[in-house]
Image (cartoon, rainbow, N blue to C red; front, top):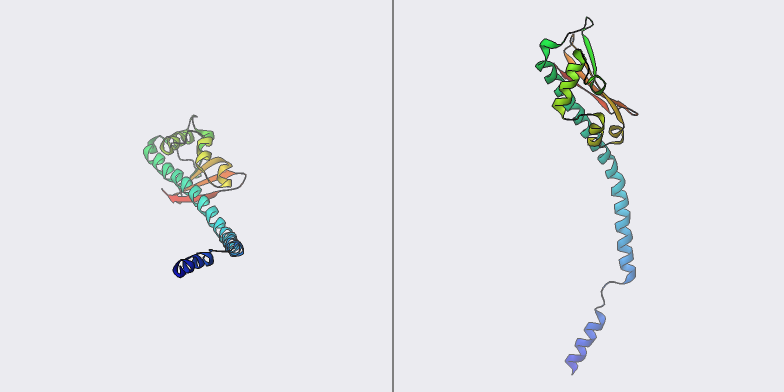
Length: 158
C-alpha cells in the first residue's frame, strides 16, 4: 500500500511546464524571430537583385554571340558605337534588328513581359527596355535594363 501511495504522489508532482513558462519561451522565440527576420530581409533583396543582373548578363553573352554569328551582315557606324534596344528593334531592318532578333532567339524571351516574369526584384519587375551598346573602339558590350528604377548594367568584351 505504501508503494502505491508513493506512486500516486510522484504522479501528482509531475505536472510539466506551467503556462507562465510556456509564455516566456514563446515571447523569447518571437523576439529572436523578429531580430533574425530584420537581418535576413536585406540579404533576400540583394539575392533577387543579383539574379536580375544574371539575367542581364545572359543578354550580354547573347549580344556577343549575336554579333559573332551575324558579323558579316552588320554595318559598324562611323562612331564605332551601335545601340540596340532589344524589344524595340526586334523584327525591324538594319544592323540593330539583326542583333535584336538574334538576342531574342538566344535568350528565349520573346517579349519584355516574358523577361519581367523571370525578374524577381521590384526594379526587375518594372523593367521596360533592355538596351545593348556595342563600342567597337574599346571592344565592349554594355547591357542596361531600364525602367522605373535602373536594375543595373553589365559590361563584357567582344
